Each structure stands twice: as C-alpha cells, then as structure tokens.
Image: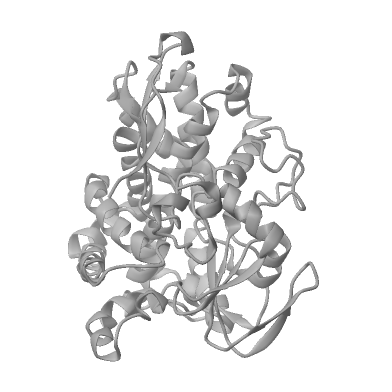
Length: 431
C-alpha cells in the first residue's frame, strides 16, 4: 500500500500497513488533522497527534483514566458479564485510577518500591543480562527470542521476589493483556484467551509458593502486601493487581525498546554506540532512545463530561462525555514543534529530554525507573560484549498491533558490516 492510501479513515492499531513505519502518517496528521474523530476506533474515538495537544490533554482534569473496559465496548451487554472478573483485576490498577483514589494507590505503591534503589538492583539486573548473553552465539542469534523477550519478565520477577524461571509464562500471560490494550480491534477469541491468561497470572501471583518466596526474598510482592501508609494497606486483590500491572507495563516496553534501539543503532557509527558505555553520556542516550524508539505508541483517556478543547493551532473540537481519546506519544515525540531534529536519533540531545513516553503529570508510568535502568544495562552490556553487533539482512517481523511497537524477531551478529550478506529488507507481520 502506498503512503497516500494510508488514510485516517482506514487507520487502526491492527491494520498492518501502518505498523512498520507509522511516522509519515503521524507527520501528515500533525499537519492536516491534529485532532481526528475516528468512527472506526471504539465507535468514535478522538485521536490527537501533536506534542502540545497530547501534553495538555494528559494533564486535563476533564479526562479520566478509568478505561479498563474500553476494549470490550464492541461486545453486546449480555457478553460482557463473562469478562467481569478480568476487568475487575484491571480496574484495581493504579494506572486506571483518578483523583484521591489514584493519589492513595500511587503513594502506597511508591512507598513499597522505596527499597528497590538503582544501587540495589544494578548487580541483580546485570547478572540476568550476563546470564542470557552467555547463552547466545554472537556470530548469529535472534536478539528478541534469546534476549529481549526473556529479560524483562526475569527482571520484574526478580523485583517481585517470585521465581525468574517462570519468565516464559509471565511473558505469555502479559502479552495477551498487552494485545488487548495495544489494539483497537480484538476478536472475541482473543478476549477469551486474555481472560484465561489474566486468571492464570493472578493465580500465580497469589499462590502460596509465590507469597512465601517473595516474603523470603523481601520482594516487591511481599512489600506491597505489608507496607502501611497513613493506616492503609493494600488488600490481597490490590497487591496482585499492582504486581500484574508492573509486569504488563514493563515486559513489552523493555522488550520492544531494546529491539527498536538495536535496529536504530545498526547503521550508526561506532562512536554513537560508545555513548552507551560512558557514565557521563549514557543517561542522555537512553532518554533519546525512549523518545525516538518509543515502544508504547499511545496513552488513552476517557472524557468525564462534555467539553470543548482548543488545540494548539486554535481549532476547537467538541468532545462528548464517555468518548475515548487516544494521545499518540509516538507522534508527539517526533513533533518538530517540540524537538529540534525531531526525526533524527540525536544521542547527545541536551537535557532535559521532554519526551512523553512515560506520560506526563500525575499519571507518569509507575515502572519508568525500572524500564530506564534495565534498558541501560541491557544495551550497554550488549555493545560492550559485542562491539560490532549488527542487524542481519532479513524480513522484519513486527508485533501485530501498533500500540506496542516493535519486533518479534531480529537476527543480529557481532561482525563488521562488510561481512554481512546483502539481502533486501522487507516487513512482514508476526502473530
């Protein structure tokens, strides 16, 4: 499909033609339709594409984060009851709370996380990274399946204090949830699969074995259960829900950020890779990768009330109560009105890098420190151990929804450019 065919009317997160390179589409929308009502998405969602509008709406109190059930809106009322238990888990997530409830839940979760400092986690994450890389063949390996897929689930399991050996199941369960929330069109069969995965995930996290293991290791799962703030403790259901949220938010984000970053680095000079190896430059480099290689392309909201929103260009749009809004941070992060050299990976971009990858305002992503730290250690170790790491010529396999944007497979090898076979790169979907 040629670029002119990629119309706003046909756009969805599951239309493959938009997935490999959505950025020309985003650029056109910023210029021509910075706010667009899509009848195809959730029965009439408002889509926003500019940095200024996304930032403003992220902080707008007329919008709610209570959107756990939005993916089910296409179902007849009679079928929604089957998924009530699943939605009940998501509704406990602090990410879907507003106002005082959000403040209390966020404060409780933050206090529980206090012991998990960078200094405490650094050797633990490094050990997991080294263990995985010890097992790959540097002359040719699948970066995703052998490294980027298992690592995030192992890291988060370690933080929670549950067995890291469960990483394959944790990845499978959270991938089903990620597809539900990263898509704009899901099948009933996928809803059913996600219902089962959510039940299995919560059963695992609440199992006596995990509870005992986390207590023994003083893991986050245990601290979420025992930490008290102003006389309040999480219920057992809340503990499991927040742990599931950390897994859902972190596993796919870290995985695709690693893959997207390695792909973006592929043709760059070696001196750029070395920025990841220096303490004085690695932080800015990772922030720029978060901006340029955004793994989660959007933030969602729901209108609390009828209101009129004035865009940065002065256009006014009327938004009805209960209408979904989708704020495309992947587009905002490439907005030339907010960033110089917006379409370039500028690894020495002066800070602070005001990307919207983790949101803005009171709803900043709970797991952002862990995403940053794990990505930093993963990439710096990769390029320290494999200084000539390159992506091999191949058909590129993309995740099947735009919401979580990245590769499902990516063959790489530690060898100079001249040793690679010359093969055309194409894109294909992977389910």
